Image (tube, rainbow, N blue to C red):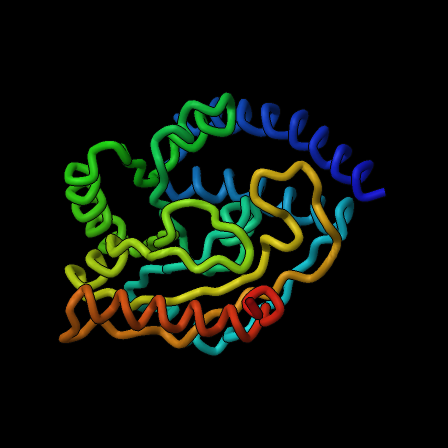
Length: 245
């Protein structure tokens, strides 16, 4: 049944995504950036609900009080990255418009990438790290000033369940430069929507939002260390069996 449900979900995405993308691309020239985001968000809400209905993947939130504490502040979300699930669902979870920092190759994905390119996100060329850092810093300041929140996956790519790769410092550097709060997020979505896997497994994902970390009078290295320490420590609480080795 898992294979059948996963196939049905794949077929749903294959049909629904191009249709929704065309609607967005036709409508976007008539809308400002905020209304574009709200329209695109409808796709995320629908996919999350269908994923729950077809594949049995739901989620629970921990730490909502930490989210509410900074809802009116400049925030950079630094999150664990195990799956495609969080890239879809986080837009439905967080209360502010999110600006993702992602590799520019995603823009080449038919329909999905084309629509993504019409939203105000930050896409970077990973092969030129120096230029990418400058671009993220400049655009990041603009987005934070506009009231958006920025989300960065400091591991850089989706990682295997139970792994603890080195985190990149770009998000911490941006937070230090802009004096934004860092909101660390841990989750175990990789168990249910594994990276590079066709199969989706039923279960409840735990998304844990940590206490916001102030960037005031802190170096990027200090922010980086505090963020990584909280996320990795929290992963061992919400998913202890994956770190028993």
